[in-house]
Length: 317
Ligand code: ADP
Ligand code: MG
Image (cartoon, rainbow, N blue to C red):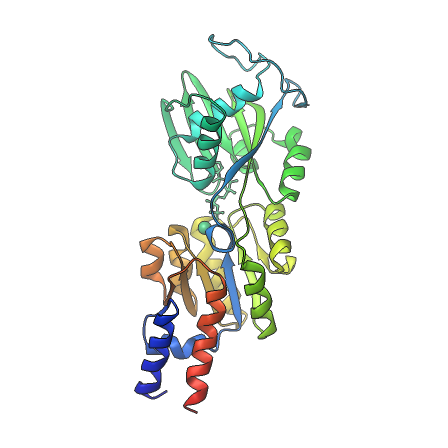
């Protein structure tokens, strides 16, 4: 492209909230044949809300009526039947040390339900898996199946409950207290209004659309279905440090991928992708690693970026 055409393209982009980091990026965007969306915060609002609290009895069976609050005021032991409120209080206390959106939703949800959430005595993030906290003298775990297994706790009794919630597109998290599975809490996110349109417009241009997430397979597929992404194009349970490898694997198939993400987690994946795109209220790290920054939070601007590149370069041919 001539410098003049490039300037026109970048200017039109800027006027539309699409910032190309340079003329070469503007030229490259039209050749993208695969768009890889991060799920949380990119296709979804990233504003999680607590939706479910399920408590299990000593045999690992869900308690339907919620039970009574055990040992109110006294020291809880895993052998007492906990109530829903107990489970939520434990989870929220453990998570109050974490900045993760899943954690914030649990803490806010507990407070909205009148629970007084205190700080844990100690906590440790287990990236991609959950959190381990000390509450009083007791260990509390909140996270996925792998977190429990790695700590010698069998998540199997919760399988049916977990699957039910995940099929609804929710992120379900197991809660363990003093080495025993005591409950499940679930957060839900809402799909962005324009996500489905963005996917269908990309497909109409002949662009393959994929999704990548640290979330579990079942939740990921439920969300993919809502926005029109083929289940085979979902890469789930990808650890933060493995996201860039996943993008490289996609590109090793000869694809020119535009990775679209918002989080700190996404920066390395944005950096390796053919055109890395940071969306909306993305973190500074993501914006720095990206080739294109979308000022708005709108997945349709991904289509706009490709279209502007296409139009600019066609005109000068
Ligand atoms: P994402 O890619 O969606 O941002 P992460 O890689 O941060 O997801 O986390 C992957 C999974 O690990 C989550 O879906 C959840 O099951 C679990 N997890 C991570 N952090 C937490 C947390 N603070 N509390 C509970 N579960 C968590
Ligand atoms: Mg994210």
